[in-house]
Length: 146
Length: 146
DNA sequence: GGCATATAGTTAGTTATGCAACTAATTTCA
DNA sequence: TGAAATTAGTTGCATAACTAACTATATGCC
Image (cartoon, rainbow over all chains, first blue to last red; front, side):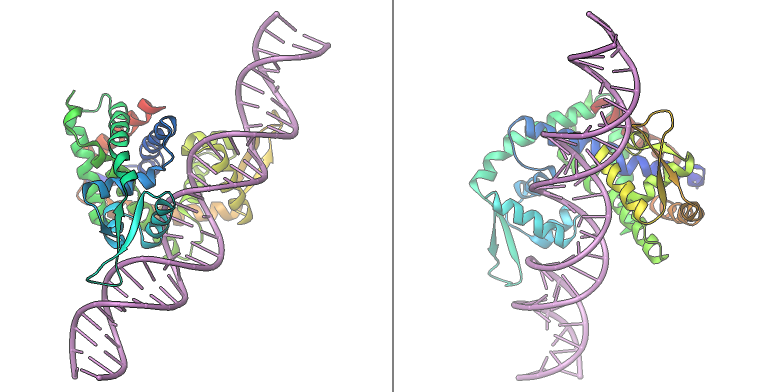
């Protein structure tokens, strides 16, 4: 495999510090400019709940690639802002179902519009095949390591 | 441009949560298993100093894609562990030059070996052109947003 | 039934990130 | 020359990350 010809530390720097944080910072900034007081981390949780409401915390861990304490505290903060509510599951008393409030549902269109604008800006000059390659590589890296 | 056919939130999830943190977590774990008590963030600073010693904090901001307070505190912690030392610049008294200690120089070979192993594992089944595409896309995204 | 094991979630402690506001030194330029 | 603007670095505050250790509920199996 030709991997050994690659400067790995360089890719490490790139992956860990550059594009993801540039996108995240810009999206966060756009939220702020629009007067929205949520963090991108909180938004990424809401994003999954908009696709499917009332997920367990464990399910949110899986879908957002976070560990349990991180989700616990993100949900704590989202609950403080009255954007989600913890509901006890009836079938398994260990489980909290995390459900959207009306306020969170109203955020959906505005923030997704901002995210789309931000991603459009970020992806100027990047074609579809390149995006597919990035996604495939990331999936492969993730699968290799978990 | 075909970007509008792409589900942007999906890429956002991928970029923000998946591969980079999987790589970071694995590298951090490998450091721990080897008995090395440094964080990957600290390592990424050392990595740039191994390439060129005695950089200013501002230069480290640029090279590691971090802001000034982050570098200030990373250097604080590295200094506590006696891995770097702040040296006042003679030509400009505003500047701290961050220089490696002997202890940090001894870490270089061991940790770079671990990073190479980790990246090899992460990149199994990913070919050179795909890596080049990822790097190019990330550079483009970064340039688009900064 | 009851004990061992697994799973869901929380808490504590340390590190890191981002922003805003600050000090100190340097540069610009009228 | 000297005031204004710029640059380097620090500090305070809030949020978020990971690990390890914890509680509570559910499941497996003898």
